[in-house]
Length: 203
Image 1 (spheres, rainbow, N blue to C red):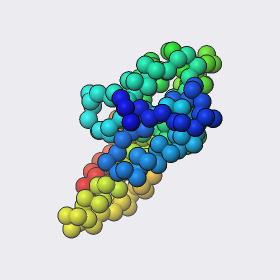
Image 2 (cartoon, one colour):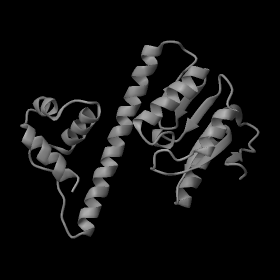
Image 3 (cartoon, rainbow, N blue to C red):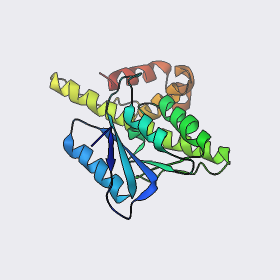
Image 4 (cartoon, one colour):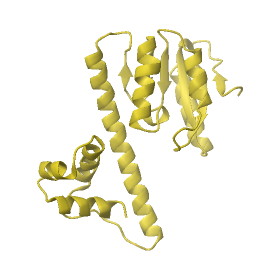
Protein backbone atom coordinates (compact mmCIF):
# COMPACT_ATOMS: atom_id res chain seq x y z
CA UNK A 1 0.00 0.00 0.00
CA UNK A 2 1.37 3.44 -0.98
CA UNK A 3 -0.10 6.88 -0.48
CA UNK A 4 -3.37 5.44 0.80
CA UNK A 5 -4.05 3.44 -2.37
CA UNK A 6 -4.16 -0.23 -3.34
CA UNK A 7 -3.89 -1.14 -7.03
CA UNK A 8 -6.00 -4.09 -8.18
CA UNK A 9 -3.83 -6.35 -10.37
CA UNK A 10 -6.84 -8.17 -11.85
CA UNK A 11 -6.69 -7.58 -15.63
CA UNK A 12 -10.49 -7.35 -15.76
CA UNK A 13 -10.57 -4.43 -13.29
CA UNK A 14 -12.05 -1.23 -14.70
CA UNK A 15 -10.09 2.02 -14.59
CA UNK A 16 -13.33 4.02 -14.36
CA UNK A 17 -14.28 2.33 -11.07
CA UNK A 18 -12.54 3.92 -8.07
CA UNK A 19 -13.00 2.28 -4.67
CA UNK A 20 -12.97 3.95 -1.25
CA UNK A 21 -12.59 2.01 2.01
CA UNK A 22 -12.79 3.43 5.52
CA UNK A 23 -9.98 1.86 7.53
CA UNK A 24 -11.12 0.30 10.78
CA UNK A 25 -9.09 -0.94 13.72
CA UNK A 26 -10.61 -4.30 12.84
CA UNK A 27 -8.28 -5.87 10.25
CA UNK A 28 -10.95 -8.35 9.15
CA UNK A 29 -13.40 -5.53 8.42
CA UNK A 30 -10.81 -3.69 6.31
CA UNK A 31 -9.99 -6.85 4.37
CA UNK A 32 -13.71 -7.43 3.74
CA UNK A 33 -14.10 -3.95 2.25
CA UNK A 34 -11.05 -4.29 0.03
CA UNK A 35 -12.09 -7.75 -1.19
CA UNK A 36 -15.60 -6.52 -1.99
CA UNK A 37 -14.29 -3.51 -3.93
CA UNK A 38 -11.86 -5.68 -5.87
CA UNK A 39 -14.66 -8.12 -6.72
CA UNK A 40 -16.75 -5.15 -7.91
CA UNK A 41 -14.00 -4.40 -10.43
CA UNK A 42 -12.35 -1.31 -8.91
CA UNK A 43 -8.91 -0.80 -10.44
CA UNK A 44 -7.77 1.42 -7.57
CA UNK A 45 -8.90 1.42 -3.94
CA UNK A 46 -8.17 4.38 -1.67
CA UNK A 47 -8.04 4.06 2.11
CA UNK A 48 -9.01 6.40 4.95
CA UNK A 49 -8.63 6.01 8.69
CA UNK A 50 -12.02 5.83 10.38
CA UNK A 51 -12.81 8.74 12.66
CA UNK A 52 -16.00 10.23 14.04
CA UNK A 53 -14.35 13.60 14.61
CA UNK A 54 -15.46 16.45 12.39
CA UNK A 55 -12.75 18.42 10.65
CA UNK A 56 -10.28 15.53 10.46
CA UNK A 57 -8.48 15.19 7.14
CA UNK A 58 -9.33 12.37 4.76
CA UNK A 59 -6.30 11.86 2.51
CA UNK A 60 -7.76 8.73 0.91
CA UNK A 61 -10.95 10.48 -0.19
CA UNK A 62 -8.99 13.53 -1.36
CA UNK A 63 -6.64 11.36 -3.40
CA UNK A 64 -9.55 9.40 -4.90
CA UNK A 65 -11.33 12.59 -5.99
CA UNK A 66 -8.10 14.02 -7.41
CA UNK A 67 -7.61 10.84 -9.44
CA UNK A 68 -11.17 10.61 -10.78
CA UNK A 69 -12.11 11.94 -14.22
CA UNK A 70 -15.50 12.95 -15.55
CA UNK A 71 -17.59 9.80 -16.02
CA UNK A 72 -15.69 7.76 -13.40
CA UNK A 73 -17.61 6.08 -10.57
CA UNK A 74 -16.74 6.20 -6.88
CA UNK A 75 -17.64 2.88 -5.22
CA UNK A 76 -18.02 2.25 -1.47
CA UNK A 77 -19.37 -0.63 0.58
CA UNK A 78 -22.16 1.51 2.07
CA UNK A 79 -22.95 5.16 2.77
CA UNK A 80 -21.21 5.16 6.15
CA UNK A 81 -17.90 4.64 4.32
CA UNK A 82 -18.34 7.86 2.36
CA UNK A 83 -19.55 10.35 4.97
CA UNK A 84 -19.65 10.65 8.74
CA UNK A 85 -22.91 12.60 8.80
CA UNK A 86 -25.69 13.83 6.49
CA UNK A 87 -24.06 17.19 5.80
CA UNK A 88 -20.79 15.61 4.73
CA UNK A 89 -22.59 13.06 2.53
CA UNK A 90 -24.53 15.77 0.70
CA UNK A 91 -21.43 17.93 0.24
CA UNK A 92 -19.43 15.08 -1.31
CA UNK A 93 -22.22 13.82 -3.56
CA UNK A 94 -23.30 17.27 -4.76
CA UNK A 95 -20.06 19.28 -4.83
CA UNK A 96 -17.39 16.69 -5.55
CA UNK A 97 -19.27 14.13 -7.64
CA UNK A 98 -22.45 15.52 -9.22
CA UNK A 99 -20.97 18.93 -10.06
CA UNK A 100 -18.06 17.28 -11.88
CA UNK A 101 -20.06 14.69 -13.84
CA UNK A 102 -18.83 11.76 -11.79
CA UNK A 103 -20.94 8.83 -10.61
CA UNK A 104 -21.39 7.11 -7.27
CA UNK A 105 -22.66 3.78 -6.08
CA UNK A 106 -22.61 1.58 -3.01
CA UNK A 107 -22.30 -2.16 -3.01
CA UNK A 108 -25.54 -2.44 -1.02
CA UNK A 109 -27.54 -1.20 -4.00
CA UNK A 110 -27.55 2.63 -4.07
CA UNK A 111 -26.75 4.06 -7.51
CA UNK A 112 -26.52 7.77 -8.38
CA UNK A 113 -26.14 8.42 -12.10
CA UNK A 114 -24.71 11.93 -12.17
CA UNK A 115 -24.46 11.98 -15.96
CA UNK A 116 -28.20 12.66 -15.97
CA UNK A 117 -29.37 16.22 -15.32
CA UNK A 118 -32.63 15.03 -13.75
CA UNK A 119 -31.72 16.68 -10.44
CA UNK A 120 -35.12 16.01 -8.92
CA UNK A 121 -34.68 12.28 -9.28
CA UNK A 122 -31.09 12.54 -8.08
CA UNK A 123 -32.01 14.45 -4.94
CA UNK A 124 -34.89 12.07 -4.23
CA UNK A 125 -32.51 9.13 -4.44
CA UNK A 126 -29.94 10.88 -2.26
CA UNK A 127 -32.43 11.64 0.48
CA UNK A 128 -33.90 8.14 0.36
CA UNK A 129 -30.39 6.78 0.80
CA UNK A 130 -29.63 9.23 3.60
CA UNK A 131 -32.85 8.29 5.39
CA UNK A 132 -31.72 4.68 5.38
CA UNK A 133 -28.27 5.75 6.57
CA UNK A 134 -29.74 7.80 9.43
CA UNK A 135 -31.87 4.89 10.59
CA UNK A 136 -28.81 2.61 10.60
CA UNK A 137 -26.78 5.12 12.61
CA UNK A 138 -29.58 5.68 15.15
CA UNK A 139 -30.11 1.96 15.61
CA UNK A 140 -26.36 1.52 16.08
CA UNK A 141 -26.28 4.34 18.65
CA UNK A 142 -29.25 2.91 20.52
CA UNK A 143 -27.61 -0.51 20.71
CA UNK A 144 -24.38 1.02 21.97
CA UNK A 145 -26.34 2.93 24.62
CA UNK A 146 -28.04 -0.23 25.82
CA UNK A 147 -24.70 -2.08 25.92
CA UNK A 148 -23.21 0.75 28.01
CA UNK A 149 -26.22 0.61 30.38
CA UNK A 150 -25.83 -3.13 30.82
CA UNK A 151 -22.11 -2.66 31.53
CA UNK A 152 -23.11 -0.29 34.37
CA UNK A 153 -25.50 -2.88 35.71
CA UNK A 154 -28.63 -1.21 34.37
CA UNK A 155 -31.16 -2.97 32.21
CA UNK A 156 -32.36 -0.89 29.28
CA UNK A 157 -35.61 -1.22 27.42
CA UNK A 158 -37.86 0.74 25.14
CA UNK A 159 -40.57 2.89 26.68
CA UNK A 160 -44.06 1.42 26.55
CA UNK A 161 -45.67 4.51 25.03
CA UNK A 162 -43.59 4.44 21.83
CA UNK A 163 -42.09 1.61 19.83
CA UNK A 164 -38.40 1.49 18.88
CA UNK A 165 -39.33 2.35 15.28
CA UNK A 166 -41.35 5.38 16.43
CA UNK A 167 -38.39 6.61 18.47
CA UNK A 168 -36.12 6.31 15.41
CA UNK A 169 -38.69 8.15 13.27
CA UNK A 170 -38.96 10.86 15.93
CA UNK A 171 -35.19 11.41 15.95
CA UNK A 172 -35.12 11.71 12.14
CA UNK A 173 -37.96 14.27 12.18
CA UNK A 174 -36.27 16.25 14.96
CA UNK A 175 -32.99 16.13 13.06
CA UNK A 176 -34.80 17.56 10.04
CA UNK A 177 -35.77 20.60 12.10
CA UNK A 178 -39.28 19.78 13.32
CA UNK A 179 -40.22 20.77 16.87
CA UNK A 180 -40.92 18.25 19.61
CA UNK A 181 -44.50 19.49 19.74
CA UNK A 182 -45.02 18.82 16.02
CA UNK A 183 -43.40 15.38 16.23
CA UNK A 184 -45.46 14.46 19.29
CA UNK A 185 -48.64 15.43 17.43
CA UNK A 186 -47.69 13.21 14.47
CA UNK A 187 -47.06 10.29 16.81
CA UNK A 188 -50.28 11.01 18.74
CA UNK A 189 -48.58 11.30 22.10
CA UNK A 190 -47.99 14.19 24.48
CA UNK A 191 -44.82 16.22 24.25
CA UNK A 192 -43.85 15.00 27.71
CA UNK A 193 -44.30 11.36 26.67
CA UNK A 194 -42.09 11.93 23.62
CA UNK A 195 -39.37 13.65 25.66
CA UNK A 196 -39.42 10.90 28.29
CA UNK A 197 -39.20 8.20 25.60
CA UNK A 198 -36.23 9.90 23.93
CA UNK A 199 -34.44 10.43 27.24
CA UNK A 200 -35.01 6.82 28.32
CA UNK A 201 -33.76 5.43 25.02
CA UNK A 202 -30.32 7.06 25.33
CA UNK A 203 -29.62 6.35 28.99
